[in-house]
Length: 173
Ligand code: DAT
Image (cartoon, rainbow, N blue to C red; front, side):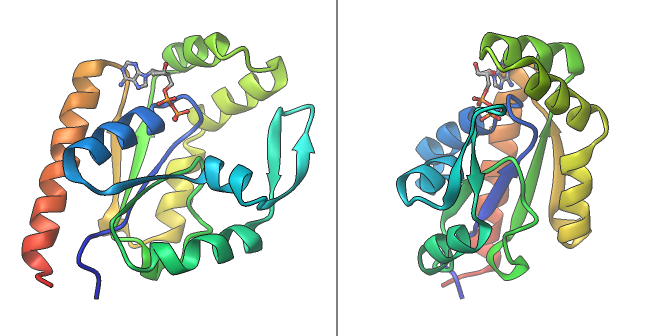
């Protein structure tokens, strides 16, 4: 039994995962767990992919590195995939979505290589992360939220904060 829930915030790179997670962590006291950072800091990878400018993740090592801590609850897990986290770890999955032109501008500003930019746009257009979330978890815990504007972000954060409060009421420790 966990005293605090675990929430996965997922979506294509650039949708606003980090921004949402940091704000939520400040507001709720839950911890922002940047999986990218864990991959880097704990060496959960098989090297660097020059073409994609990203780490080649070793999922077994990553799960081992996360297991002890995450199982205790209270994490907002920030990662552009979600199907590797066991269902027993996860109480809510938030899939952030953006319009294609907005995502294009955000990824262009990050100077993504053209191929990586195009693949991420395609992934967003084809609902890849939403589908992955729906295939991996009970549909009742998967929520799709749009993240085009700061107003939308504020309302998303309010909504997730309210959900956490309700979860704590429903799961008294
Ligand atoms: P991610 O962690 O999903 O890659 P991010 O949080 O780093 O995304 O955000 C990418 C950029 O977009 C960053 O400059 C902040 C901006 N951004 C994110 N969500 C936004 C929103 N809802 N409204 C306006 N700008 C947003």
